[in-house]
Amino acid sequence: MKDPNCLFCKIIDGVLPSVKVYESANVLAFLDVNPVEKGHVLVVPKRHWPTIADLPVSDSCDIRCAEELMYIMRVVAKAVSSSFADGVNVLQANGGCAGQTVPHLHFHVIPRYGKEPVQPVWRSGAGKYTGEEERDLFAKRISEAVNCIVAEERIVK
Ligand SMILES: [Zn+2]
Image 1 (cartoon, protein in one colour):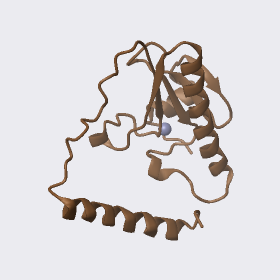
Image 2 (image 1 turned 90 degrees about the horizontal axis):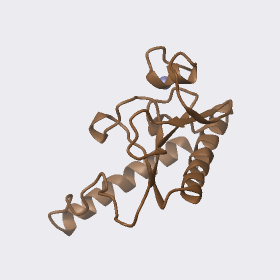
Image 3 (image 1 turned 45 degrees about the vertical axis):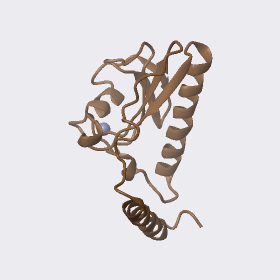
Image 4 (image 1 turned 90 degrees about the vertical axis):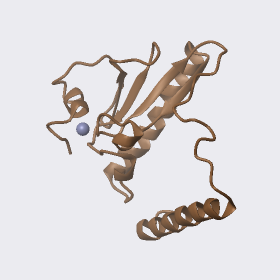
């Protein structure tokens, strides 16, 4: 399952070059060509899933690919933070308004150095609710949607 126009599918197929740090039948991890910090790694599935919502939910070889993707993302983050960085961010974006520029699911593993906290991609507190009523409305919407998806996909018992 590949998209011939996808930048990451081309990297996976070797049509475009990359500096690989890990590769298996299901997952590729390589250095970001525009690193936020030295050692910035992208971890991608070898299946063309555009966003996290496209991850498989049924028992198949695709679900094993998804499990391995999560595992390798964890391992790369652990390796970076234990071998040379002072900390690590793991970032994942879905959709253009979230900052996703390549529509092929990927995790950024970004080493951080020094003692000063980085400016996060979000502004903490910028999304203040008008009050408890609005806050509770958002909680209700999210809760209902989560329960609906869980019921449809029947993964969590
Ligand atoms: Zn792709």
